[in-house]
Image (cartoon, rainbow, N blue to C red; front, side):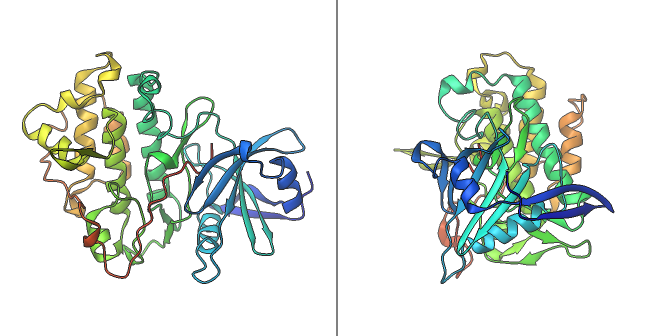
Length: 347
């Protein structure tokens, strides 16, 4: 593999990793000319291809679409590199390098053998049945651990802005890794929020951010809560029923919680092979994360600790208030554009 330049970066004064700058030619060779049969993901920001480098290692190559007028694609390229330039964690995808060739922008990641959650756990029923309670538990905890690292341990802090099933990829051991940092924003320690264009995915998007454009770490917490409900229930975030119209998973979970039937929300594909108390606790934690009042949502470190606790009674004394639900795109802040890309960024 020809490496044109190595860029070191540091975390806490210690060198952690080096980014490689790849040539367009070597990535074209690695992906067999970006052949259609090598395409493993596609969406609003571009396509992703499986490739094999000269050293025999497999990679995922994201080819970004650059819109010259809006510079969309270029912004995502810069955001991805900025977010991942000083961090490395077992629950974050690894960016190996990138390529800049004229107007072409490409990002190179480790290849993830087990796809993304939206295509595996939340895909066909036969896939869901392969995800045991133990595996769902560890995946949920891993995502929480990765987000806690981004929000509270990294400086500057990182807010992802698009936590959802298709942005969680799984390696050969089914270890979850948060991916696609194209919409992420960096927060210095003394900043609690920033005002930015609204971006994310309907169903996972926190209502207060969508309406005001004020982004905080609690926006990611909301998205994680929706994802946690999704992992435990196996239900889609937004479902359509002829009689009821669009129905949101968050609303369904809230209704079942109030009627004392939260256990019935657990994915039936588990065939009852799970600890009921633990499953209900996970669902309650999901509801804590999606509360309408953002300040009532726990921090990700607290969420991670709750997911790891063996004390099933600890949530009984916590008051869970009603969730926030963004049911209409018309509520999104005027002049802001909603991103609805839902492809798996790197498999």
